Amino acid sequence: MRAAVGWVRDHAADYGLDPGRVFLWGDSAGGHLALLAALTGSAVGAVVAWFPVTDLVGMPFDLAEAGGVPDSGPDSREARLLGAPAASVPDLARQASPVAHVRAGAPPVLLMHGTADDLVPAAQSIRLAEALVAFVMGAFDPDNSLWFFRCGIWRLNVSAGEQGNGYGRFAVEAVLAEARRRGQERASVLWVPGPGSPEAFYLRLGFQPTGETFGGEVVGQISVG
Image (tube, rainbow, N blue to C red; front, side, top):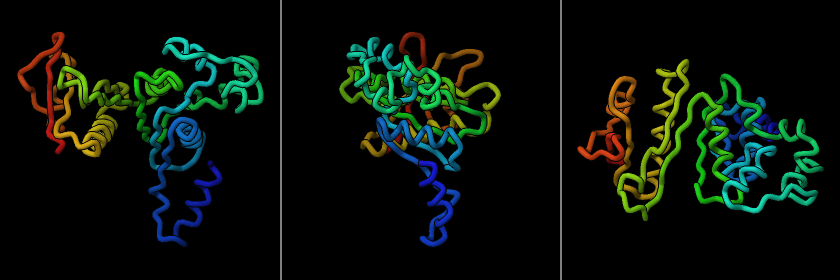
């Protein structure tokens, strides 16, 4: 993957491409490879990963917690990649896990993961997200009985030292772009009012309070149609 990125950058001019705008995208195993390349040195502008594998060592536990069927044997997916079960080669498993390569200056990452996934559990994305400088989790559940859980921002976090650098705006705008792609007309966000509240941040982005509350949190919305 790193060699492919290097080739594209080296030959970008031959194809009228901008070498500074190389991005990676992948799902599941492809998301794993895209993240691994982006976090281990490939010069890319950003990476998008749908339901990626991020922590080979933690996969059996995550599967059990998600109601899946853990497989730690020699024929498991992880063993086929590593040549042996992850528990037998923990150092190699960590080297092959994107979560172990999170670093300062990492490119922006957009993770998308369904919470009902029992093949690659959402905990894999959550663990990587929590290690990154900033992360956002979008909620897309069109059949939810509560309108504000059908489309919106479920969780957003930017580390204290990186706030004010645009990471939060980038993350929110990525979720709103996905909402538009899905044909949604509005997106929601909930925040706790009071000192330290992200209310001012969301208002600057265009969210407006609806007057509704849920569990003591303010419900905000923005038009995305």
